Length: 220
Image (cartoon, rainbow, N blue to C red; front, top):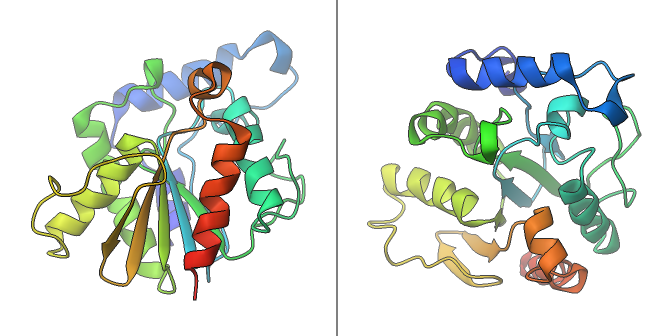
């Protein structure tokens, strides 16, 4: 089972040490929490036609809650958009036990451990890639992939190149709402809902909602 293998992964000592350290020291606002502190698996509908690929868990978000994009501002932004476009059962995600369900959507990441400075190394990305590959194999109904940020976009393309679905990544330029066809799957770029992007207005709630409205029109 992919999720169990992800949670048990110890391939990247730097990341495991960082996640464990954050889980031990905690943030003052979350001192009462028992942090997850382990690699974070994907989350969502096993029959999803929409796959969403992010970067990595937040140190005090998913590394705390155990569910990807949960418990931080990025997740607040993302799940509200998914709720408004009919992919999520509720507009917020506070914990792994809050009852949130995704319909026809699955969220995963290019990396599964919270990295120092939010920057996994190339080797750490490569170590994690096998899990994304395995998830893509299992998600047989996928028709649309929304990549949140260029790193998620590149992670998906690197898999497609190595599997022979595309000849080169150079032809696929990342851009917000820019789309590319790869076989039966439409790849859509989207600015990452990081606090840096949302607080500066580079990505607004309307822009993010528009991406998922558009994704829904592509589903057949």
